[in-house]
Length: 209
Image 1 (cartoon, rainbow, N blue to C red):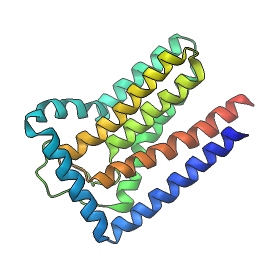
Image 2 (cartoon, rainbow, N blue to C red):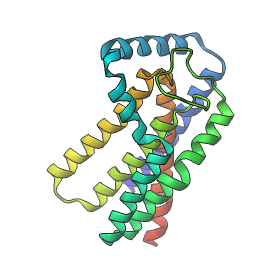
Image 3 (cartoon, rainbow, N blue to C red):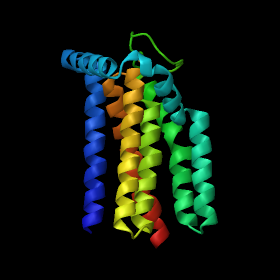
Image 4 (spheres, rainbow, N blue to C red):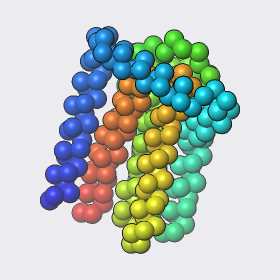
C-alpha cells in the first residue's frame, strides 16, 4: 500500500510540475529566462570548451540509434537471464514510449532551441529534452529492475548511483553543447519519470495478477 501511495504521489507531483513548467515557458516568464541563462553560463564556463569532443561523443549515447542499440542489448541480456518480464518492461519504456511521447510533447510546446552556438547538430524543437527524457526512462527502468532483482545492497547501491550520475551527466551535456535550456532538461526528467512510474504501476501490477 505504501508503495502504491509513493508511486501515485510521484506521478501526480511530476505531472503538476511538468504542466506548470510548460505553462511558464509558453508565457515567456522572465525568471525562467534568467534561470536558464544563469545555469547555461555556469555550466559552459565551468567545463570549458576543450571538453567539447568528449561531451559530444558522450551525449550521442542517447541519440535515437544508440538508444535503440542500448535498449536492444539490455532486453537481450535480461531475456537470456530468464527475466522476461523485466525485458518486456524496458522494451516498452525504451522503444515504444520514450521517443514517441517526447515527439508529442515537443509538438505541443513547440519551444525554439537556444540561440547559443550549437556544438552538435539538432533538427527538432527544444522542450522537453529527448536525450534527458530517454536517459531518465532507460536508466530509471534499470533502477526499478535492480531494486526487484538484486539482493546485494552494496553492488545495487553502486549501480544505482552510477545510473543516477549518467542521467544527470546527459542533461548537463545537452546544456553545455548549447542545444537545450536547463528547463528543457528538467522537463525531460519530469516527463521520463511520469512514463516509468506509470509503466511500472500498470505493467507490474497487471503482471502480478
